[in-house]
Image 1 (cartoon, helix red, strand yellow):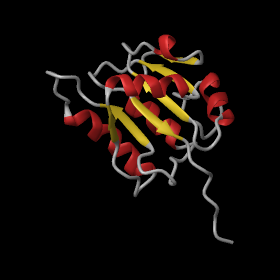
Image 2 (image 1 turned 30 degrees about the vertical axis):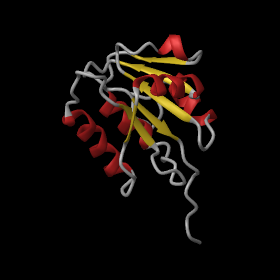
Image 3 (image 1 turned 180 degrees about the horizontal axis):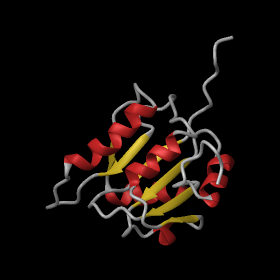
Image 4 (image 1 turned 120 degrees about the vertical axis):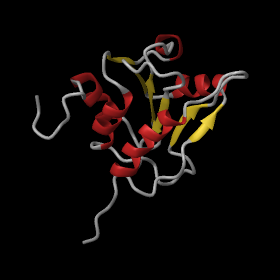
Length: 146
């Protein structure tokens, strides 16, 4: 265990976050997400809910400030409805870690899957809420004023 790194961040995830470049995307898939179908780099975070994992990740990386939507979630399929509390719980973490982040983009299901194919990695979580998947785009490390 490392000091200052949330224990929800396992060694494989820490390595992936380190190796990602700015603009790379990371998918946090719910427990039912077909991660292995869409990406060859799948990291297990079984039993960990997405808000907790999101908090651990966003303590280590920032979101891309050069794109209109550095976070994306799947839009509901026809006949389904979204639970607004799901996005609100993710948004609370994003706003606490990176205030001023633009709204979460909603992406059609099959377009979401296509983005997953190009993502740096897919993290399989223990999240069980419907439409709980989220894509994060890693940003450039902010330059501090000297």
